[in-house]
Image (tube, rainbow, N blue to C red; front, side, top):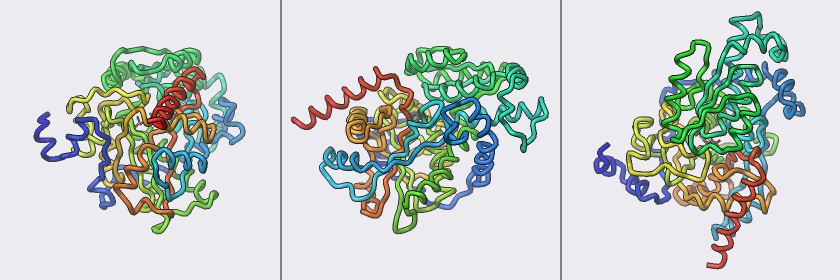
Length: 436
Ligand SMILES: *Cc1c(COP(=O)(O)O)cnc(C)c1O
């Protein structure tokens, strides 16, 4: 990789190398271009989730109240908005909402969307090929022991920094699939413990996600009965995430949030490999169109999706190629090489991206607890860091008519000890800030 040439072509790479927070505006945003996935495929995924609702209701008691629908609340957070204004010494003119995927059933993270969806699709295929399931059956039968014995002849493998393993692992184990997860060095002990308690085989590696994933891919390729959930390129994962937009459109309507040329919506999505934010953003653009503006948020040490999209090299460049260490306290965002599909699909659909310092996450984690009693994991607070730089760089999105949606991607499953540690780190930083 010729760094000098890269900097010449893309001067912002110099700031990325210096770990300075940046706003990158995507020059291709809004251009018309053919896309490899369609709106119809999102509705195919919506219908599959509906077919599986009776199954989910049966095996995951926390979904009984919603009749097997796995969805998170959209919460207006006025007290947090006030805290944001204090912290940033400026007004936030628009409205502020939290899309609380931190509360999604099964994994307590956005991974419940893509990860579970991909497992459902695999289970449906096996059940149709090897048994007599039809599309109009009550899929609750898939929880019966004869199906369990059938699924036990098949395996599911996934590599993950943590949350994808939780969602795929728990969902796959519920069907009886032999489930193996490959976990990178940054995966938390409690996630491994929880997976093992669910009967999942956990393989631990002391390298980062980008080097663990090829090992998992190889292991799966060697076994024809084994399905590999490919976080770097799966369209099923992608479509599972995209379904969020169909649900959000309805939540906007119910809560009286307008989406039109006079009332734009900015949606802030933390990006790791880029799959979940791109899947959601693709859905938003397909379902709600030009007046919803997706923005990605990444750590200054790991701006992998930003770097891939800026250079258009996508998965062919990693943050190590420009001398970054790829380390962050934001679990799930420590992915140094982006997805093979995310950046390409986002080329014309992403407004831009913003990079942040890790410390800022913890301040917002603490503020969110203090003001709204909502706990999220550090990566899930990334959107709060992006509002100020984004509205400064794009003033037309800084008005009173704008709705800002921070996508809180995870946190509900965190043990109390971790919540307390994150909260303390944030509170200490805030105190320091106030007295200096
Ligand atoms: C996985 C994850 C992300 C990022 O998703 P990618 O698909 O890796 O880009 C963000 N936040 C949390 C909490 C996650 O688990």
